[in-house]
Length: 274
Ligand SMILES: C[S@@+](CC[C@H](N)C(=O)[O-])C[C@H]1O[C@@H](n2cnc3c(N)ncnc32)[C@H](O)[C@@H]1O
Image 1 (cartoon, rainbow, N blue to C red):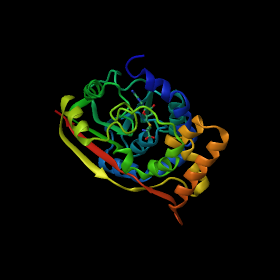
Image 2: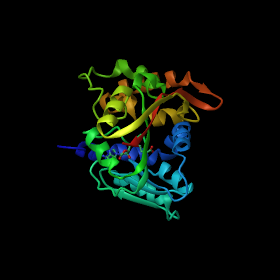
Image 3: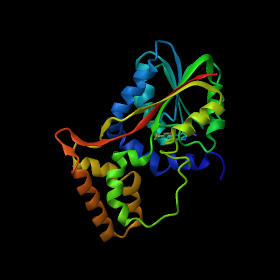
Image 4: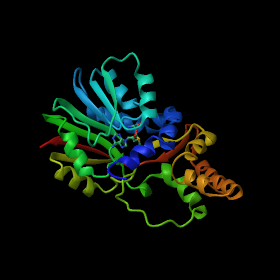
């Protein structure tokens, strides 16, 4: 298996199905980060934008509603189908099922944008070099990605609770393609620098995310992503129940009148074509 094929399969399997079925809850959880990055994008009427790894289309739609002409590219057929359904009626959106790392782009886009869609490339430098081809000379790059998992309570609170139930796995390469592959800001800087970008700015944002309106909603989502999902896949029924109860108790400590609110840490990264 070569290139991004592993990710293509991953996002056309259970991961894509989870993002489609939990789209509203995930969008609501990610709203504070979305608002920050959409505000930073500050797109204007008629601007041409590529939304990399656009998924179910939330940010594609948000920028199109501000008048930009947005091209959402993604490898997940299921997520794109959801995106198309949600964007029907907006004539300034196009979607393509394609690998963003190798898709040919004409150099007439003012912005390459992504909300959590650029951490999955097998060869990030080659991917960012290719994306740069799509920018005008004054074009800009803007994306949001996660800082280290350890700084993200939205995944770690339940993760720590189920840790004792998980089998010891081989050490994971922290730079391997995946949601936390861009945790190290020096690595992001180096990748973008090598890919021909200048004026690189990497800013930390640490909002609180509402992972569910109540405990049932929060645990339903956690059961489909990250360590709790792994526990469910790996354990026998009785141990599974114990692990989920532990996760439930840990999440319950974060219940407030506004829902289950947990800390997050992300980078907002911006750069210009060199
Ligand atoms: C964490 S999801 C984020 C989706 C969306 N941007 C959002 O914020 O809702 C990551 C997305 O990146 C897409 N993706 C992963 N590798 C890709 C690639 N090489 N080319 C295009 N899309 C890719 C996945 O299919 C998935 O939709």
